[in-house]
Amino acid sequence: MFKLFEKKTRWYKQFGSLSEAEDQVPLYKTETLWVGKKKICLARTEEGFFAVSDRCPHNGFSLGMGWCTPEQTVVCPLHRYAFDLRTGRAKTGLAAYVDTYPVEIRPEGLFIGVEETVFILFGDPG
View 1 (cartoon, rainbow, N blue to C red):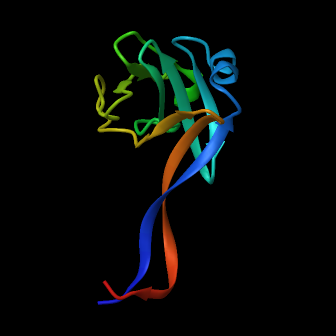
View 2: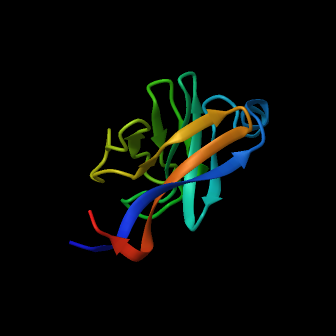
């Protein structure tokens, strides 16, 4: 069977160093970033950095305008719905979940991974 498309994680560099990321996103704060074609909320807790979809599924408000808690949640500022930063699942409210994205700290900076569907020019015989 030949495949024409496959999913791959593309890594986007957001900051040139860990200290630059920490300066831009203080502890228990959030920042909205464009990562590829996605609007993502980057949050920082004592456990590190987390990336989730910026759009609250309840009413579409920006999670980057909210805040995060020591319990590893991000809180939407509009109706105070909270989402687990590790899993994306709703902790409060009626909304089901937000997408999560992997974050890597590398010697050359902070990267966020976004899964993308890519076209395979000649197919994959596997």
